[in-house]
Image 1 (cartoon, rainbow, N blue to C red):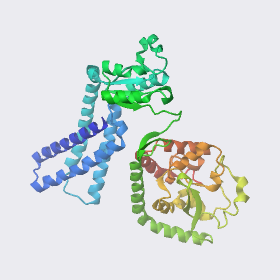
Image 2 (cartoon, rainbow, N blue to C red):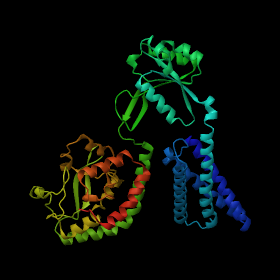
Image 3 (cartoon, helix red, strand yellow):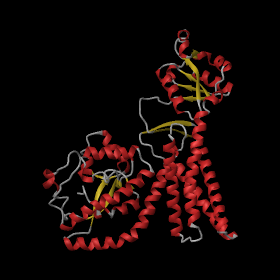
Image 4 (cartoon, rainbow, N blue to C red):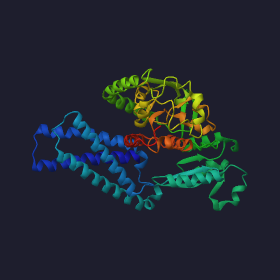
Length: 463
């Protein structure tokens, strides 16, 4: 359904744009070149809407989504379209597009899309009962708890409607006779007879293979009747963020991933990191030079400080920062260990005696972290991600879940940066990191980047 809605929205948007353009031409006629120039903007409009649909695909559904929620996502899509086109017009110095056409399209298309979605939502729910004869009909192998749970979940998740024809019991052949009320149609050995006498489009095996005497008989029956066969893959009691099947030659491998990471979106995230860093660095180079000179004048020693940190999948890398402490700060770590004010595997001293005069200001403003953009360029870090931790802190981890943070690339900022920074306890810090990992999306990254600016300017919680 997501693809159909995406195609519908793109088609409606193109139609609305052409209508708005034609209405505009009634009052201000355009020549052929001007008309074609305005039409060329459709490419950027449709591309932006398609990308927004891809990012927000779970939200573009009629099933299980209120009209208000759908309207909010449509408004977000049109706001993104507005922003992308404005930036494109500015960067390429385009002046042939009428502001009235552009603004009229954004407002009109938002209203038309919401109205279209309201009609579809009404039609979808009002006609579901009338379409029952076209529901997907599923037969489930199994009649226990797992099979019943699957039946309930299938009915709740189906967008176009689903009917469970019944269940086949794999246990004692005489047992099903006492469970007619539970819609148990018979023993699994009778599958061919059940398929011949019922309309069945799919069969789902919801019992472990050890409970089936002959799985091949089920496969053969499905092949003969032209019925799709699926296998319930909750083999182990394991909560996975994503499960996928891959083929290595002719060997199927079922993957359980504790962190949902879409490879395509990770590539986009890396591309965004590179573009934003490359764009920002020319403006930051003068600041780098001034800060470097100021550090050398404030205290003897190099302007930059490097430290080994733990990154993605626990791989080590050299982190770059502006030096904020005396040169021998690492050697004096044991002297100040007793002053640590943080709990857990973290180290924080509000007035660290090793700080230089300029170093306190650099930390307060987070300027000391700007060189980490070089780590972003090198691929060791991302703009957004859990903070990279030192070997000392990682060695103090006392819970396995703490190491889940190494399943993603570390970053310059994350939820902890916009939620209190160093004022947070380590447990709160970890909770926010895990929340970010479990709910990661590009839109979340963008929100965090926008919230980071005021958090840094405010300077609260910096240490």
